[in-house]
Length: 345
Image (cartoon, rainbow, N blue to C red; front, side):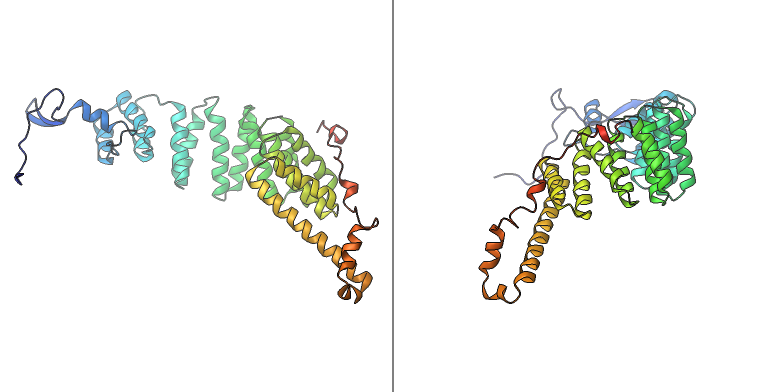
C-alpha cells in the first residue's frame, strides 16, 4: 500500500542536478541557480520557460553597467520587454545599435504610448544611420499624423524625402499624398502621388497609382482615373493590380458602361485576391440584378397589362434579335495597352 508521507529527497547527481543550491560567497552564503535552469529560463521556445520578472530587469539596470547592461537590454528587447529595454539602453556609458532605437520606438507605438515612441524615434533619427534614420523620419511622421499634429507630420515626411533614401523617400511622398488628400487638398495630393509614382518604387508606385485614380475619379476626371487604374493594372502588383481592376469596374459602372464594368469585375475575380474577389462578386451580382430590373421594366413598359396575361412574352423578348445582345458589344477584350495614355507619367 503506497505511503501518503513525503517522498524522500534524492541526492543530486549529474543526471538530476539540484537546480537551486546554496553557494559560498564572500561574507556568507547565497542561493544560486544551476546553469541548466538559467538556460531553460532564457529560452522562450521551451515549454517550461517563463517570463523574466521586471524586478530582475531592474536589478540588472541598477547593478550592471556599460556593455553588460546594454547586452541585457538587447535580451529584454528580444523578449518584447520594451519598457525594461528602454531603461537598460538609455544610459550614455555605451554605444547602442541604432536599430534597437527603432525597435523600441515601434513597440511603444504598438502599445499606443505616443510620447515614449516619439522620444525613441527621435533618438533613432539622431544616430544619423543611413538606413535607420530615414525610416524613423517616416514613422515619426505617421505617429504625428495619428496624434493630430499635421504640421509635424509634414515636417518629418519632407525630412525623409530630403534624404533621398530609395525606399523611405517614396514612402514619405506617398504618405504626404494621403495626408493632403485626407485634408482636402487634391492639388498637393496629386503632386505627391505623382512624385511617388515617378520613383518607380515597386511597392509604393502601384499604390500611388490606385490612390491617384481614386482622387481623379472623385475630382470629376474619369479619363485620368482610367489612365491611372490601367497603369496600376499593368504593373501586375499582386494587391494593387486587383484593386485597380475593381475600381475600374466601379468607375465604368458609375459611367453607365455595364459591359466594361462586368469585364473588369471578372478580371478582378480571376486574380483570386481574397478581399477584392468577394467585393467584385458582390458587384457582379448587383449588375445582374440591375440588368434584370431594366429588362423587366422595358418589358412591362412595352406590353402593359398583356405582360401579366402572358408571362412568356418576356422569354420571347429575351430570344429576339433586338434584345439578345446588349452586352455582346463589350464581350471582346478591351485594349489594355496603356502606352497611348501617357506611360511617361
